[in-house]
Image (spheres, rainbow, N blue to C red):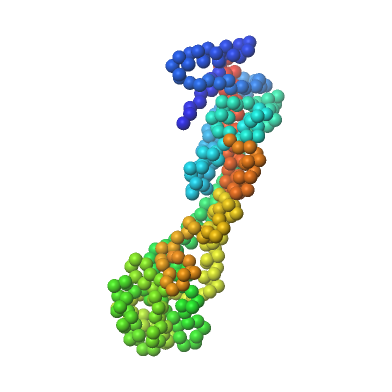
Length: 365
């Protein structure tokens, strides 16, 4: 990582002699690469105002650095699947030179080619006004960052909570993405279908005994619909009046009845909610037209740990503006906002550094 020092030196007629002397000294031992860091002449004001500005700029400097680091971390979090591309998204607008102003350049180049932005921060204004403009700009960026990251974190939390339901074993995970309507006897006054978890070593025992665990069990009504490493999920149909007796006998034989009611509307709602959250989270980084390829699985990152059986269709448990715009078509709103405002915050921070050098130099003159 590069380290930068901003050094204020007494001025001379062309402001070049100090830089030449420094280049002569440092080049002998290859200590540093030196460039001119141009700072305009500001309206100085009173000594008291400069002392006050010195303190305020120190606090604003620390705040700006903290804000930039938080924004960079947010970019890392949003680009969790493409962390190798993070540096190319942490850039700054090129500057005021005609050849650079339409470019996004790396942060080192921005600092070494720094020019004061007279349009944003007019040097003819009192220093207090310039500092106030910078402080308000950074405060607004922080406010927006908080609201946007809070919304993103809420989205992530909701998605994680739903995904947790799709993990674990058959005893704890949701069954809505495993079962289907065809697995159940529905809308019957007398019959009901139960779901029973059977340990893998007991499959044969289950097949031999389930019909006799209680009276009124429908013969040949069991079917293995899913399994994990520990056991399988079987259906069994029986009369409603013997449910409690069947559960007791099943427990005695180490078969576990999972409490589950098939509600097609609720299952559809849960699946749609998971799909929506996955899509919304992905779109904060990339819009769906880029994130999803034709013919691919809609949500390739979501893995279900349980294998459904019998139904193969069931789900298993430096750029130019023009170039930046074309790429921006595939960027999600949060990443796009972070890129733009990281650049704005970084540029403001370097202007604050320039102001600190100017104020401290005048106070020590």
